[in-house]
Length: 147
Image (cartoon, rainbow, N blue to C red; front, side, top):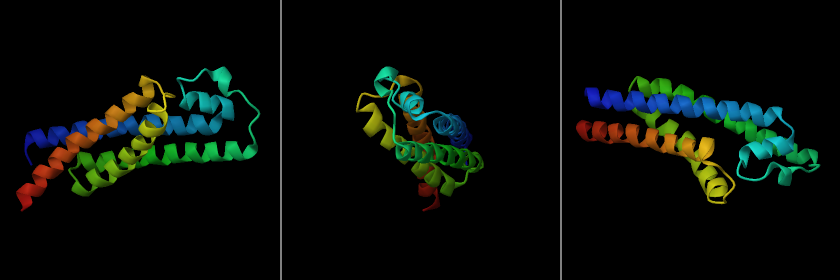
């Protein structure tokens, strides 16, 4: 594997660690806050006063499930980053599927809906897309070299 390919994998791994830590923190904060505050944190472009309400406990349970999903997806991408750093080609796919699919959902429903802000939301989508592009290029080159 070339030094450029290793550099791209290490950059990708670093980006996945950043993405993972931000999402782990977001998951913990989502689960630790009352529903109105958690919603305001996720839909940061919305006036927090518009989200103040007395939510049914089922809403809090669903929001906590979302926080849990943020936490495990962040942890999984951090673990995947270790394997990407070590040039594991399978980890490139698994990590991209977890982080990439998570961010597609955010982009479609929150960003395109006009509810998100650039930082941290859209920026994390750019981080994951860049990590996918860097490691994906290495995967393609590696696959072609194996043929």
